[in-house]
Image (tube, rainbow, N blue to C red; front, top):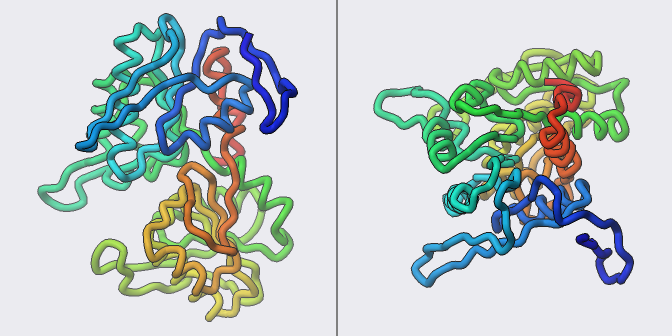
Length: 329
């Protein structure tokens, strides 16, 4: 039996048999989330060593037998590419160690914004990542809020596409003023997502229409709808440089909004995103912990998705449906 102890205590929180049919392992930068997932699953985090060499190369080795086990590998693939490479090596090592199945748990699927050829002579990065994972030995993918739903079709294995809405919805219903709330999207591409929230909550929706001259630089933005005197909630999947969402928030405030908040699944938050958020009209921005947010801002709230992924893992292990996990899609 494994015994998991409370921090700074000799009290055993729970026990788990060594003969469990699945094991959970984690890459370096997503260990914080994997530990919380294991705590929710009441199982130990698997023992693995990632050894790094002076030139930057690294190797992966499992420090316990995984023969015949269903192996869940928790790792978001956000930049740098070391995170992706760690996951690939973890999968290859598991395949060579005779794991029964290899399930990649990728809360944030990096390179997802490169999902099509939007101009001549460019790569389709999301398809390339899908191919790399497949060659490495992927049997199943569990991920959340892909930038484009069609990326699921890049894989020839089952993809469990979770939604952060189940986590966000509890926050909205308990923390926000529903009687005066308006759902908003910072660009036309997020209309479907915002519309789903608006319909579920039975509240109005407004849209920001933007045009770009180049990536991460907005040329013009305008509001479609009425926000005067309203508490506005902007919803998006990714916040990178925060240029779009902060400009949308400032525009909402200029048009008479009472307050503006934002929520997004993935806190990419590349510099100077935190500074922009702090200096903007946003009163709060809510993220999940799919990516570690290492900066400091009083306006940022982080909600954990550990229980959501733990429940998905449990249901996969027991061949149960996961569709009931979807509050809205």
